Image (cartoon, rainbow, N blue to C red; front, side):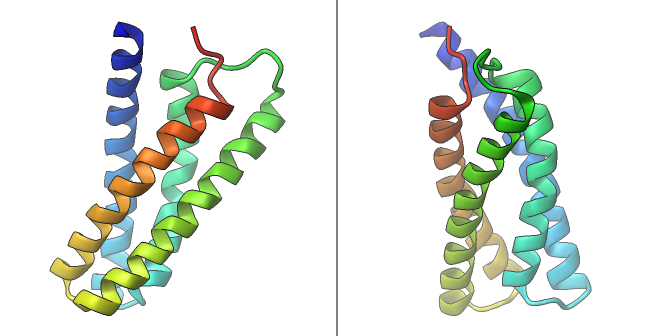
Length: 132
């Protein structure tokens, strides 16, 4: 149980950093540059996935011996694409209901991040982690 708690803690630190990247790019694109928040969310999400892959596979999950790095990356990207679809659906719903103000985008993004974070941990633990 201690190992799982430590793993969740590491996942949370990496996730917080990825969120900071994701949120920072989202706000820059949508609020400063005036891009559509849903498009901005997709771009910021992809940028944060690159960071998340490197940090997660280095600090959070143990590599599986039966997966090559290429297979590992392909699985990570596939799982992240599901996360992206969840993120986009939730961002679309949130800005449709709440509007496109900075506060509305922030509230929507925080909620979407919570849902995607749960998906990311459970799916990566299942398909990428070598376990203990």
